[in-house]
Length: 563
Image 1 (cartoon, rainbow, N blue to C red):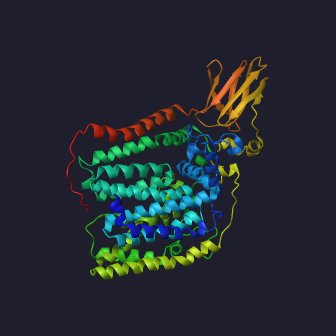
Image 2: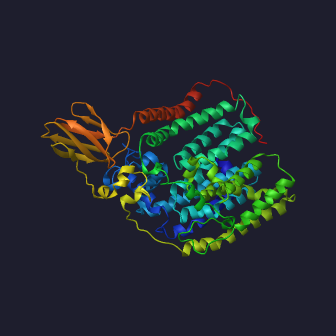
Image 3: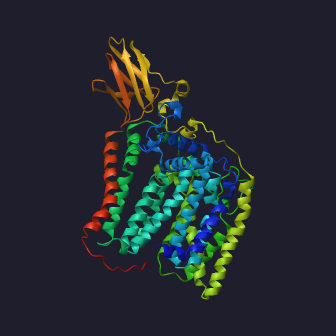
C-alpha cells in the first residue's frame, strides 16, 4: 500500500499544494463571514460543550439553542458535519485556535481528501497520473466548489464533495468485482452523504439511475446484484435513526420546515435558477454573491472532450455516464427547466445552482479526456501540463477577488444563531407566537388549576420538577419546545401523556402532587432504529474477524476490466 502511494507522491503533493492555494482567501482570514458560517460554528460550539467519552454523540434535542428551551435541530438537519467540526475544535484546543480557525482547517482537509478521491477516479478512467492530476486540478479550482466554502460557508454541502466521489469510486470497484473496496467506499460514502445533506443525496441517487442502466448487464447478475443490495441495506440501517425522526416529524408533527412555501416552493426554484450567461460571466465582487461561473479552460477542456468523444467514443462506458451526469446537472440548474411539472418534493433543493456540487465532480473528470486522443506520449504529457497551468493561472484573479472582498464575523457566536436563518425547526405554533417564545424563561407555568411548581433540575432536554398544593388536576406548560419522543414519568413510575399547546410547548395534565422527570429517549420507532443501527455497526466490525477465523470459501479470480 505504501509503495503504491509512493508512486503517486508528486501528484498527491501537487493536490495538497493546490488545495491550500485554493483555500488561501479563507486561511488568510479565518474570520471571514459566509452565508452560513455562524449557523455552523454555533451548532458545533454547542455540541463541543457537552460531548465526552461517556456521551460522544450529538443530542437530538440541543441545549443552549432557542433560549435553552430544547431545540430539535438534529431531528431534522444532518448533524455529522457539525459533530466532526466539534471534534476538530476540541482536538485543536491543544493549540488554542478559535472555532473559525478549526473550520478553516477542516475545509482545507476536506478539499485535500475530496481532490484525492477525484484523482483516484481519474486513475480508473485514464490510467495516467498526469491526466488524473488534470481532473483533480479542475476540481480543486472549480469556482463553485471554492465559493461554497469561502462565500457560502455551507459546511454540510461541502462534505458532499467528499462523499460523492467515494460513492462513485465504490461503484467502479463493484464493476471490477472488487467487493471489499466496493463495500468500504460505497457504505462510508453513502452513509456520510445522507448524514450530511439529505436533499443532495436524494438528487444524486436519482442521477445515478443512468449508471445502473448503462452497466445493467454487469450489475444485475447473480454474483454482483446481491452485493449491491447488501450494501444498500447496510447504508439504510446505518442512517435509519435519522430517517425515522425526519419522517415521523413530517407525518405527525407541525414544524416550520415542512410548512407550505416556508422553505421551498416553485417561486424559489424559478428565482434561484440560472441563466446560461451566469455560467460564463464572473461577477465583480464575491464578498456575498454566490460564484456560479465556470473556469473558461475547464469549459474548453470539457467541450473538446465531448467533441472528440462524439467522433470516436471510448470503450469505457464510464465516460458516457459522466457526460450524461454533467448534462443532467446543467439542465436542472437552468431557468427554462420545467420545475412546475415535477413533484414538489424536488423543490427542497431550494437553489437549482446547487446542482454544481455534482457538476464539479463529473465535469472535472471529463476535462482531460480529449488529451488521450493525442497519440504522441510526450505531446500528450506537455499538453496536460499546459492545461493544468491554464486552469491554475486563470483562477488567480478569482482567488484574489475572494481575498480582497469579504465581511467578517467574530469568534464569539450567539447560541441562537444555530437555529437557522428562518428558525425553521421550531413548531409552527411557536413561530406564530414568536414574541411569547422570545420572552419565555425556564419556569414551569400553570395554565389551568392551582398548584405550586418548583424546578429542581433543568439540564436540556431533561427536567425535574415538583408539584405541591394540587388539590385536583392542573395543566402545566413545560419549558420545552414540542417534539415527538419526550417522556414524562412520575416518582411512582407512571407515564403521563404529553401534548402540544397553542404556543408549541410541551403540556401535561397532572392530578395530585409529586416529583416528575422529563427525559428524551426518542420515539419507539427511533429506539428500534437505533438498536438496528448498533447491530449493523457491530456486524460490520465482527464480520472480517469471523471471516478470518472461519474461512468459508476460497477467493476466486475475477475479471476486473471495466468497459
